Length: 225
Ligand code: NI
Ligand code: MN
Image (cartoon, rainbow, N blue to C red; front, side, top):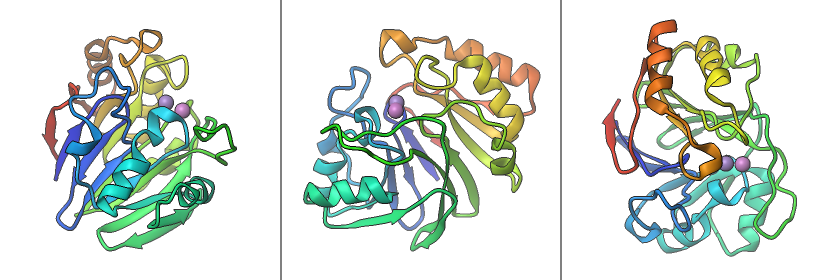
């Protein structure tokens, strides 16, 4: 499975059956390697309503007729913006999509929509696709139930390390110890000065203190799972 990083928390997963785009924040992202018109996903997965995650979801979904999967509240709002294909789920709930299973997980954070309306609870994403299990934490602080998310085994965890709005490097290192993934990729750092971090130093700590492999991707990089 090809996994391409588009900066911040945006990843494209090219699975055998569909291209899944997560948290497409491209317009207004100073680190984005391309614009929203360059991406052609079949599905868009959105962790919460904040502009740096919802991002270009409306424009891409309308142009592509892509299906958006998110929480009930985010999907309701997207419907009001003219996004016709939405699949609403909620925390703890899983669904077998045509490309694999997606369960929404807890995330300790907020969620408001661009117009200021309430976005419900934010979420993380636990995917089982092409025989691999992938956890995208969304925006979150550390929580000990990450141990439950990792219980079934994780091939890959995508974790925020930026601090200020989410887990910082120390908490994210503890998260790796709770989740015990085979590989971890850091995200949600360096986009803005307030979340600047040394991702390579963090990766070194992960590999010294845990059994996980830490892979640092630059925006535009593709990695194969
Ligand atoms: Ni957020
Ligand atoms: Mn964010």
